[in-house]
Length: 231
Image 1 (cartoon, rainbow, N blue to C red):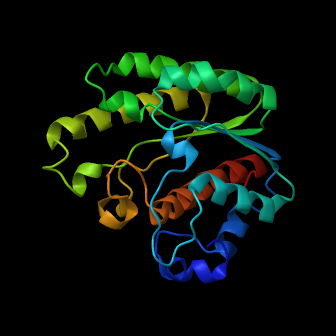
Image 2 (cartoon, rainbow, N blue to C red):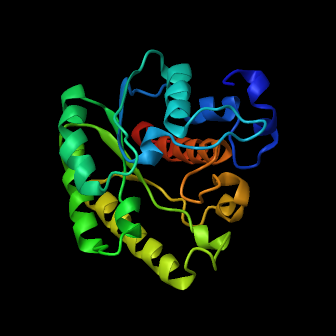
């Protein structure tokens, strides 16, 4: 469900912003062309959560931007299973041709889980996507990965996986600083220790997780807007 009847639990979720609070954060948002490139998180994979709309984070952001600023054109090129180089090779050109003024780059997690993970190589790929989008005039936001070991540390490899996530997140932050991109920092988000924000596979967000992600995006977009307005 996407209507109010599908969002009963969202109203009381401490990590999901209300439409009113979201509207205040995004008031007079100037963005009219929103593009998303990436892997399964960009695509919006996730299991239903009782009391939450079956609406992935990017669609939620689109909905909020349209409420705040009017018509917004939308392009989501996300495809599951892709590594960062594959995202760049198959999606970046199409995203640039769309001429977005707001874009998100959501990938690298599949690289991080691979045996041959190279933090430097992932940073270079992210840089080669965020940089051109910023140079083309888009505001860009990226995500750090939640500490999933807080929920099932033993099953997911404990310290070694945690260290990989931290390394990956460091690369994401470096790229963001380099290009003045926004970071939706989920690493230490208080909800990341709650099993209900994940799907059963522990690799994808649940629909509650998508709602939490979207609210974290609203906060970052609101900060960028406040800076632009000089608030």
